[in-house]
Image (cartoon, rainbow, N blue to C red; front, side):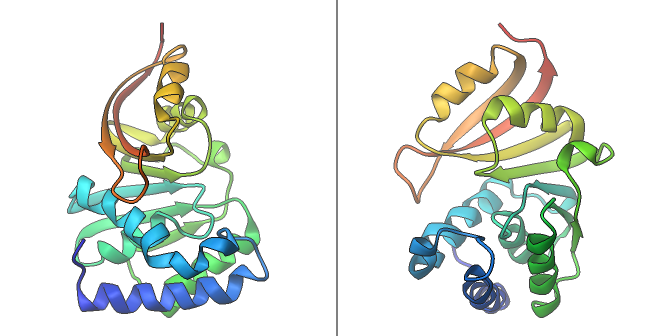
Length: 198
């Protein structure tokens, strides 16, 4: 994905902070640090490309080190989308706030709470990466996504199995966008979540 100079500069600052903080708190696997751009940033930028939104509320669940939430907020800083990054770990939330401050992002709020304790967000967009099995994520989407909202869930090679498992309890529609950074992985664009299932 081609990004603006401003986005590139902000991602560089974010990457430097990630490298510095990662030795103190486990934000990403240390083995992936040398491949930050390809393994993490490019991976998350795909979501921004697929979503293509220009306004509304975007809630990123279990933000951790800010993937994909911070990358999405950085790449969408010229839009009217407001981002809420939800992270229950105090130290990780402090890291996220540091990045927001250092990159001068004005479109992001960090929420240091548990996902299930948060009041319903009625979000236009929801995202999550490496957070929980799809079945569990559905409960979060039912709670926090607007009826007309879309979720973008980054899933590994076992995503088909996760869809089958989730469908035992939940009804939902989805489009699987093949990942460009990991063979067999997918970004699931999920809509119409409702309790039910097979």
